[in-house]
Length: 285
Ligand code: PDD
Image 1 (tube, rainbow, N blue to C red):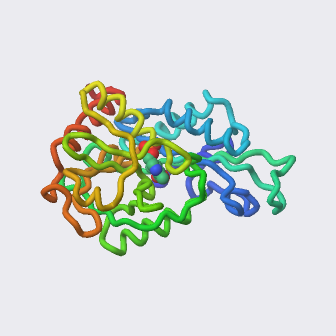
Image 2: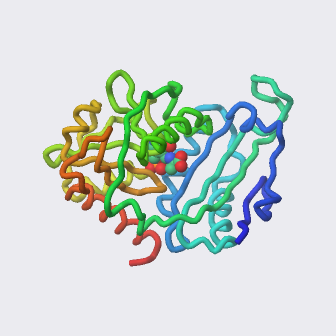
């Protein structure tokens, strides 16, 4: 089935969804994006994504392309028009199209696009056995807290991970793990979850934020500090979080088995807690 996509106020068949070659997203990666999960045709954790979009836009002095209510309505309309049961919604805002000039254009109107992607989230095929990661150098810019569409470093990193038989690349800077190419990174040692604190060095994950709240309610201790790849090799468990994978166990890092090489009890519990909340928001329980 061909999808219906959103482009600047119109819903059109996907092969008719077009933007200008002068769009600054295309020429300069001058844009912001968000990815939100959908379960049972319902948005999961929509508010944190809308808040993060607002923050990213402010940080690069880009205006909202529409009202907040319109953005939510666009998400819901995409779900409806595509009969999306489970998957994600991708939205992107750019500074619009104008003659190529690095400075902000005076006249340009921002571009807003959105589309759906079908994906299994509750029954993620990678969840039961867990995934492998490899460490790679973090070659990104200094404002990773902004969810910018400038994703060449993550693209190269993910491809390298894939070529090495891994699902994700964990990026390393100054000897410490920052995050995955499109996910946040965690290890578990002696029952405690360890992850890097928020800063300009990583993206403030919406899944991370919700999981923190739920984990604390369940009495799971979270220690926000930097960790090295060596610490990760010796960890009891490891996992990643993102809107497109929720909580996903990691069983091997750089060819070294983590824990027993199987998803451990803490990550299995955290995945269950997260899925429970996602099902609740989706009206499935
Ligand atoms: N990526 N860190 C990075 C660099 C990311 O790109 C993402 C999300 C995350 C997790 O954030 P959240 O929990 O809000 O999804 C962390 C999305 C899924 C993507 O680019 O497809």
